[in-house]
Length: 109
Image 1 (cartoon, rainbow, N blue to C red):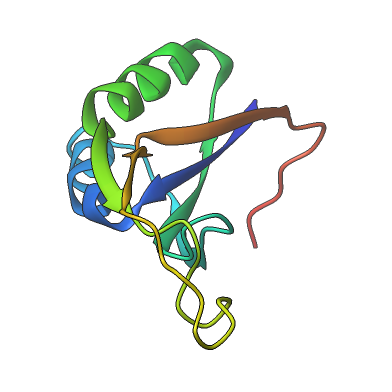
Image 2: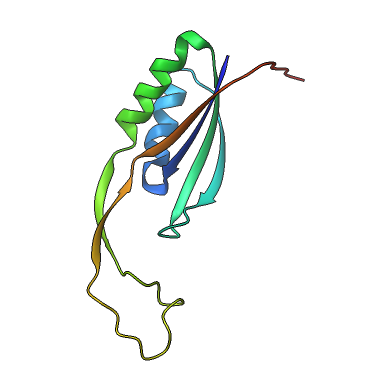
């Protein structure tokens, strides 16, 4: 058995949740915040049998796509008063960060 921990952008949370449920996968969803852009994320904890791992990874890959977004280099609360704020910079956001962990033991009570 594996534990899949997937951190996905808020914009992708409904699409991946629907895809997992449609395919019979149960998961726990926890709200989280990204460190770089301080935007909303969702962290999904998905327990899967070894033979279902590739299907779950495929669903995540199909549902969570990266996209371009313009952001200010310094967040407004981090810039000293009177600081010049440069033009926004284009960065990639979205997609998913996925960790796959071996599960030594699983119990349901």
